[in-house]
Length: 173
Image: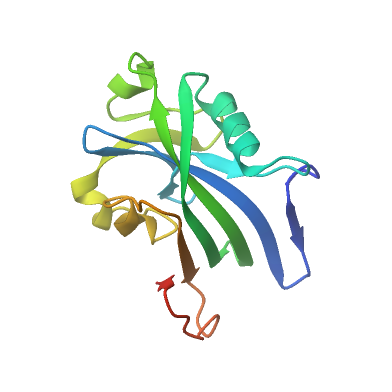
C-alpha cells in the first residue's frame, strides 16, 4: 500500500476507494485475475489523494492497458465489505462503462495474457460463464449481464453480521 492511495485503517477495518471499468465486447467481459488468490475483478484500481474517479480510472488503464480506452458513464456505486488474508476491508467503489477503440489490440486477445502488474493476468470471460467464475465483487456477476442505464447503488457484504439493515430501492447481495 502506498501513501498516495485513498486507503486507511482504524485497526479493525481498512477502507479503500476503488474505481473499476466494465468492458464488454463480443459477449465477453474483460477481467484481471489475481493469480496469488485465484479470483478476478474488472480493470481499475485505487484512487489516489487529489484525483477524481475518472482521473484515477484513466491513470490505472493507461498504466495497465495503454491508450485507446474511452471511459463512459457511471453505472454502479457500491459499498463492499469483505475479508482477504485475514484483513477486513470496506471498499467504496465506482464502476464505469469502458469502450475500446475498434483497432485496440486487446479486443483480439484470447486466453489469459500478461498484465502490467505482478501476480495479475488479463482474460476475456464469456458472459455465459460468469456464475462459475470467482468474479468479485459478486454483484458484478449479475449486473454486467444487464448494465444499468442509470447508476445503481449496491451494498455487498461477504462478512457475517455486517450491514444487516435493509434499504428500499437498493440492491443488496
